[in-house]
Image (cartoon, rainbow, N blue to C red; front, side, top):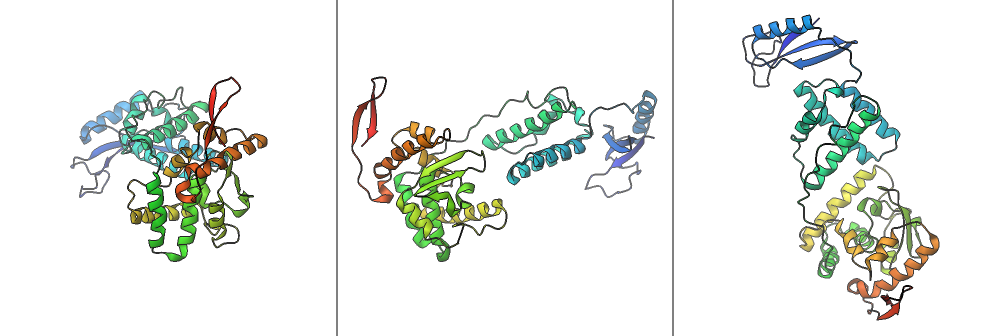
Length: 365
């Protein structure tokens, strides 16, 4: 049985669903396989809505559907994401996107996931306020969701695949200059939380000389540092990283309190400790007077800190112990010349040597 009702706006003084003298939108609902389905009739006239309802019933509104409701598809997608072992932060972002999608679907009357096509997926994207990288990431997540639906034969094709990626108008992330590095380190002396200043200095040095993401740095355990070398598997990509650290960094970490973790207690969620350190770093950057500073800039600073970009590229390459040991020597030799501002060591001399193909190559002595 098909029913019609008023979908009163928040500003309407009437709440009765069958009240027919206001100008709020009219919807109809019916039941399919025990589930209630609601859709707008695109009219505000009660008599016109009754006529349209009769035509729908006569024409056979109840049709067989092979796709689930939008809500069911979202729940299945999130359950699969959890079963795949995705990080809590990734699941949180997917949940945020799909929740907005459910709200959009309800407002537009899209009950089934098969109601979506390119035009409707595009209309959903138009509701986003994100720009640049955030919008690109969001579109990638939407494509992932619809690909999940295609794989389960709920859709014949991916409607988000036809949507073009937005232009990335954000400026490139610049590494810190040596002057900025010095200003940030000097600002630690003026940091209001003196008890946390020791940890903050060690964290700054670790970010500077390891190129780690903030989440990996603040959750690192002491046993990950062996003989001055940091060895771990990154949380985001699962990549194994082996990074030699200057003595200044290992000494600063050793001075931090805590038996196992220098930067957190080991309890609670990873997201919480990252958020706490983001706030602490923002305070420090404000004290230092360095505009546009954030933790990720240290990754770019690290990447630019070696004698050759090839060292950094290969340094994060395949996990080969012998190869890593050779790279460690090259990276350690780069410390004095490239990091003199913080280590106080003298720069090393460079010499010319021939590579295997006979071409000249720069090396550190």
